[in-house]
Length: 483
Image (tube, rainbow, N blue to C red; front, side, top):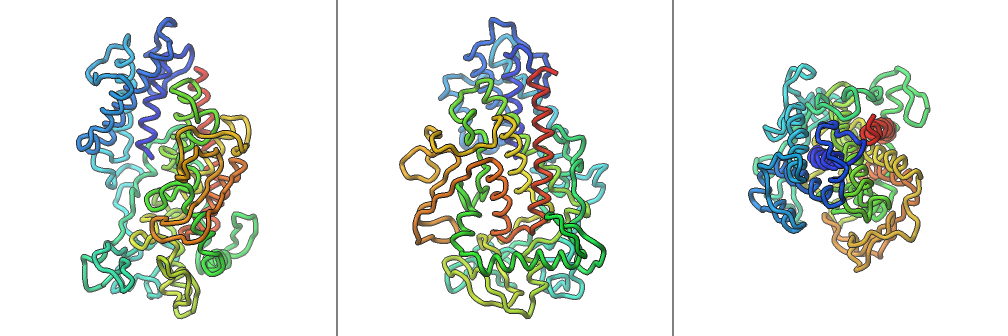
């Protein structure tokens, strides 16, 4: 997501050079071109060169192996010109805009230069160490005396080298090649310099409910009870969803209209392609503003969601359920193409690919819910309406459901067949989201269907996302209005 942000802000800063009043995020008015140069062609060229330079920096190994970005630039009719820093040319404007963004972001404490490995900083002066363990012999797993039910547990995840009688990945504790132990992905992210926010914890919510605490707690629905009661209730909700919700419903609501195994991004993966002001535009005023504002909602403000402070080193449902429901019979998903069955709670499994199981970082608040809510808030403000689906507006050239027809904005038809980690033999299902708010709610609820987040991780994540989206939009407006 940071990569998307870097590329699109570079594009925006290049575009801003050809606008009468817009300010670049990292270039201000320093690249402003005279009125006679503010043509659509110059904008297209500058934006393309900026995109190439930024994308090559962010994904250098990929570009070295494939040359894909260079081919894309050439396909658009431009020649590689990476050494051009003449602001009187579109190539120079694009290169200079990208350079300004990259120089700033290389020092944003993300750890890009070391493949995003954990970074020590003033905010996080020591490396993160998990309280719980993936090793069943450690005494710090669900059901063990030293297991902390309020803290995140890294999981032992199958690699696929060993498979069960059904041919699916499984863990053999005696074969180290059969598994990998999770490590907290980017625990330092809260120190990354945000866009718009004063700091990564600006909108951080209060901690989620704590197991064993009698202190009062008010949940995301506004109900007050003890911490322990809220904890148990929210764990029980995920167990009930797994038992009572049709697998097909979880399948569609969780995977959404993009690649189900790699992204699982429900309905928010392509914001600038899925709202009418941006759907058909070239690198125009509308497109540049839309891309540059939607991408910050899901990248740099993500520092709000991934930090290892107390509210965020919290339990995921899979570990909490295996701890609370050990020696109790539950009904849950039994694995790919095996529907649901009764099992001991210690074996409870979320509706996820078996070689993924649950994200490799704590679960509160939900970044997915936050990203979706931020996107929805930005799109609502940008378009001036909450309307998403109108039954008439198509996305030219986009056929995500592979039915041979251009997709309607706000609609997805889920066909019969392989969805990545199991087969769906039923009937086509049509999903429609009338409003951006519908997208926000269902995007968040998908995390509960998938068994990876609790109620308040979802609801409080949405609340944070709305606040982030509003601030990002207001800050963006100040840039393109030249304020």
